[in-house]
Length: 99
Image 1 (cartoon, rainbow, N blue to C red):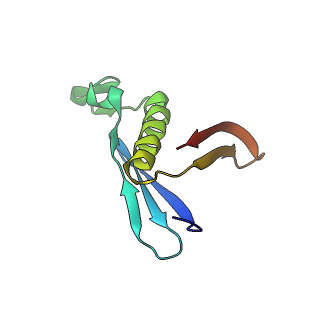
Image 2 (cartoon, rainbow, N blue to C red):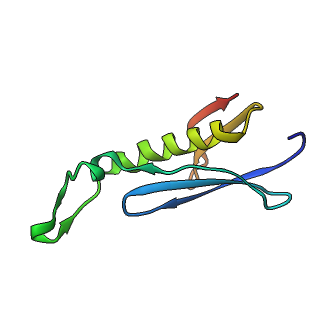
């Protein structure tokens, strides 16, 4: 891996979140993962008879964390630190180190 740079793209769908890790220098896809929203899959907050389909915010947060962690585990083995920042104020929300 050496001096390679990586970017993570994240796609939030109706029932899941999917990150993809790409080598920024050559465009190679390094890893990806799919995490399904737990509460959505259990049918909570939805009533098809009323045409009512809602999502729980925790599903987005929990699945985002799980999917990024798993995508990183899939291929990246060297030390990597991710900073989750609130872009509007550039404040740390969470910082994790992966090995």
